[in-house]
Image 1: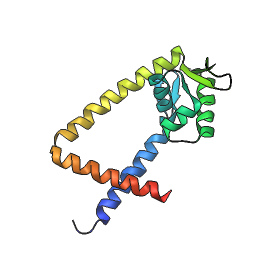
Image 2: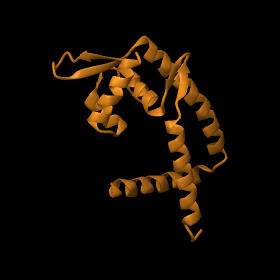
Image 3: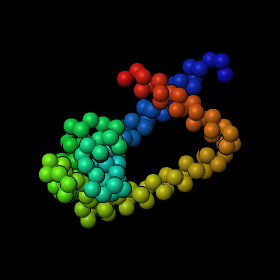
Length: 148
């Protein structure tokens, strides 16, 4: 394929559709609707109990201010609790509440379902082509990082 435009348009459509998907709130527990950034933050806190707001910002790839705002939302929704760090009075550590743990478990179930579908697609693609696709996507990511 000498003309990369068709591939570029396809990637742009996928990015746009994923962006729309990210914005669409989903129900994780009865009466609990969360956006993708919210549930992914819950998942990170659950995976790294006691993580600081600064650590959360690094993992999410967002500013400390954005991470702090997200934490306030999740505290208000009863999903996360903040505790003063035993090693520093100026640092807060983050933990999931009972509801947060339940939402995280529901999120994992959804990922398992999506993972099965994704695995079915990937199983139809030869491993060598998958490796090349990964290299291409990493190259695009590096270019985007340089543009920022």
